[in-house]
Image 1 (cartoon, rainbow, N blue to C red):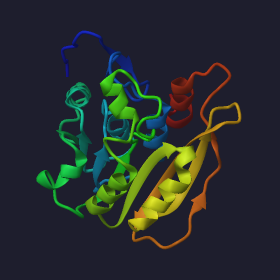
Image 2: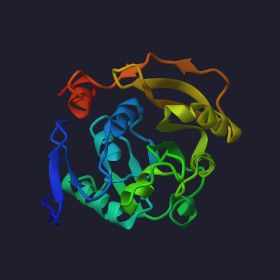
Image 3: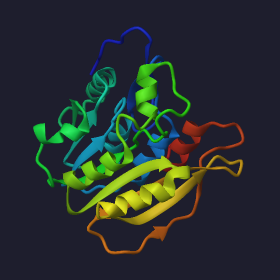
Image 4: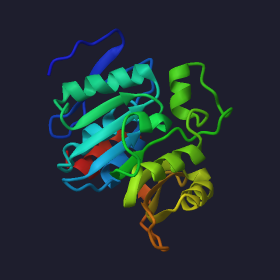
Length: 244
């Protein structure tokens, strides 16, 4: 579908089965974090899902070509980003698969039933409040956890999921211990996890699949290097994960 671009918006080719994404240079633009998480998430054709903090909608859009999931309800707290996500849903003709809700996910009971989803996934704001604050409010909210503290993230995921449902999350590696402790405090048992590095020996991210009410025991997967010698993150990830 054709959509009207506003000032400072541009359409980018995701180089993945014809998908395109609109980004605004003045907003928060997606990074390799989103592509990594989209590749890690495993869905079934009947799964009903929630995305917490969809941003421009890129993760849900990418997932649309990985599997025939039933539906994704994508929450976005920032109205500007929610409107952008809605445009990206329309651009890729995904209105029947992805519903964008412009609201704080902690208000989810106004929109959907608790414990009714098979999968929840999120690339949340994971920088501590007050650290490296950005003058651009939209970027600041997208990066810092004052809008969605870790406790609230995990509590909300637990409340949305059916028993046995899966929660996929990517977070800064320096807060791995805190993330695992918080997940387990809400009966979200880590089952699979891996770290990413930047190709220069620095570990950057942790990516976890947790199961609501799951048994103890986690499979630690090999570390993923997300950079090549030229720093072409997106190109490398698209080639490695999406065969483009």
